[in-house]
Length: 285
Image (cartoon, rainbow, N blue to C red; front, side, top):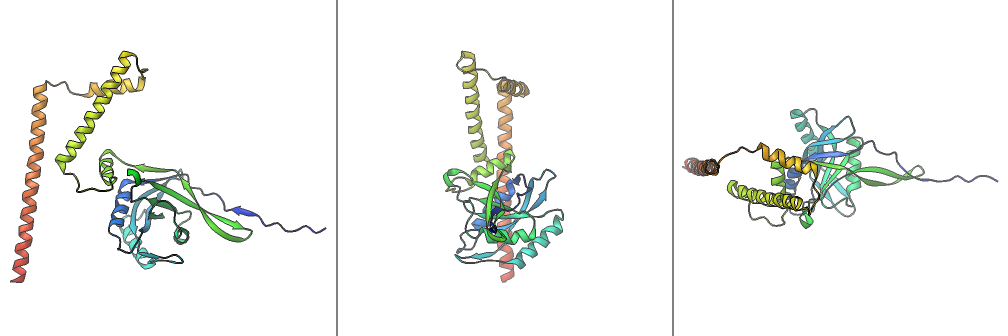
């Protein structure tokens, strides 16, 4: 009896990418692209630039938005704009190459496979970065995906997106700016004094938590933790031993310096505004 040929449903070879990491500036840029998008556009897509580290981690360092159109049955990408922007970026940073693409929204959408297919021709195993610019529930959902092909015999059926670990590189100063983006409604960005006030309130909250933890350990309500105790001891030892009146004087001097900077900045803005108006009036006359 002749044996019948079997058709096997199989995935493509597993990708070599281990993880990805993205710098905070990329998230700020993508959020800015989304705010400045055309009125009819529901999302923004663009190119990610960076490099692949020796351990396989994709280091995402730069980005730029690419105009596109998409509907229920087709998508279109401005390839000429993409190539022009890529050439401009590589003149400044020749070591940065295409490592993937980004889109705004929550997770992978319907047209993502077609865009991913285009970037797959630009680079092997591109990373797809999604940024939820709506910040649902005050959380920034940022995910990274790679794609594997699903085929039936010799026929390719679809592309399956698999999430990979993503590390968000962020320093303390960037964390403050990132937290400003999370609320759904922000009237204005805080100035220097307002930002200092928020930071001091947060610092006082942390000090109260430390006080409570130390009291709980002393009273035996909480088991002591050696690493936390060592960290508290090092922190206290690093503080200068100043009398209260000397500390108050230093704080007042620092506050006066801040107020002086705000005053000088206000004068500079006023002078620039007057110069611009005088220049405009001179051109009209």
